[in-house]
Image 1: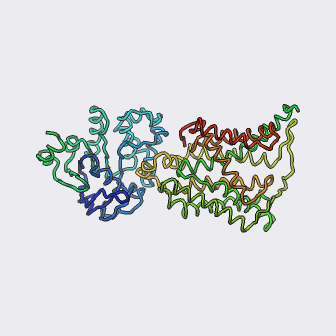
Image 2: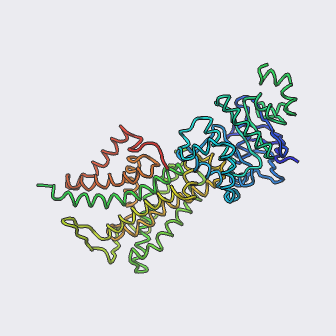
Image 3: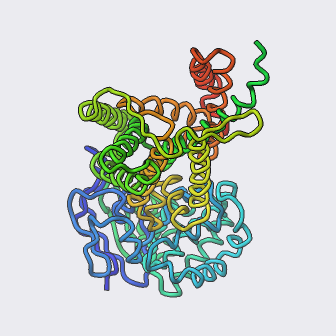
Amino acid sequence: MALLDVKGLHAGYGDVPVLRGIDLSIQAGSITALIGANGAGKTTLLRTISGIIPAEAGSIRYDGQDILGKPPQDIVRAGLVQVPEGRRLFPDMTVFENLLIGSSSPTARPRRDENLKMVFGLFPKVRERGAQRAGTLSGGEQQMVAIARALMASPRLLLLDETSLGLAPIVVDEIFVAVRRLAAQGMTILVVEQNTALALEVADHGYVLEQGHFAMEGPASGLMADPRVKQAYLGI
Amino acid sequence: MDLLPLLPQALADGLLLGAVYAIVAVGLTLTFGVLRIVNFAHGDFLALGLYLTYLGATWLHLDPYLSLVLVLPLVTLAAAFTYRLLIAPVILAPEHNQIVVTLGLSLILQNAMLAIFTADLHTMPSVLSGQIVRIGNVFIQAAALIASAASIAVCLGLYWLLRSTELGRQIRAAAQDRDAALMSGVNVDRMYLIAFCIGIGSLGLVAPLIAPFNYVSPSVGSSFTLTAFIVVVLGSMGNFVGALIGGFIIGLVEAVGGLLTGGSINFIITYAIFILFLLFRPEGLLGGRRL
């Protein structure tokens, strides 16, 4: 069953259309990769799904419910949580306060202690940095805190926007080990990446976004072997 | 003339004045720090509070201190309506659009008060008016002491609220990164509403407290708005502690400046400081925003 079902989605900024007819289906329990060049509309799609920007046309169904037009906090409450591009931590708060903000929604609040334990188990570094101001962390640590903050909301569908961007390969490995662990526990994950090889390697299914619509989709292994993907995105 | 013996009195006056400036500026800096809205109508809500206090005194024969129970909720309610009807629709609009809205609101409020209450000055005497507390050679109005103490208490209370409560943390999150707060499940719109109501509601608390030793006229708000802006720029826009410190600095400058210049041109000193800050340290004393 599709946990997220996007149909005919059009969205953009003001008069500038960015998404032109997006159809996206994410199966529960899977990892889906969304790849595409800079400016293809990946972040716009995620921001529309999260309710940050409005759509002009189309529908977004999550867990059988129409979520298009719902306020962002209701979408988070339903378990659809995004880790934004560029981490976007609250820089003047401590790491621990950032995590607490992650469990702001009324459904996540009662599970705060349980979720804290879970994210500290997943990222021991986050616990070590608990009292530090988030703005003073390294990029990799900030990314871990950003994911941990999203996990505090008890997501069923986790959207990861450009998680690997600007991070050292060893840190990327560490983070994606954690992502795989979350998936193994049954969490549904959408990985949006410019790092195509990484995204297709970790994912079950993939979509290629080009100029506001999907140019290709299919099993990740199939896309990885596709000559067009190889040439345009993998540089092989 | 030897001014030194008068200095303790001027310092006391400055601190009393500064505390009131601080709470007015804290409200302004809170709305700016959280909503990113420059509210030129801020002081006019203080005038509204003063007129409500005046109405309480003339219609219901309420002492200003008693009218607090009416003025505080009414001003807060006015803030809530203002947010919903005027501020929320332009919250994502360009800055100059927002400024037109708050400046327009200020003009509307001032002229409405002018139409209803005329330009006459009104006083609102209290049982405490004229009561003097003497400490050595320093004479302090009891009402001013109460207003200052309450202002400081409210500032500290708000600081605690922002720093140490779940609500305060969510308000700070909305202030620091709107989108990230939305993605974390924070109801940003509600945080904006609450911050706006607190920022303006504190004026509804201050108005009855300063009423016994102040007058009210339709334009009294704009002088408070101006002073609050100077304080807020001095202490760094959006910086809570900065507004507190800035309030006391401007209060002291006005009182001591009044002593040195005989009171006639002491505002020149305040504005000179303001201009010097804008020229040489526009980020203010503390710099950055730390909400």
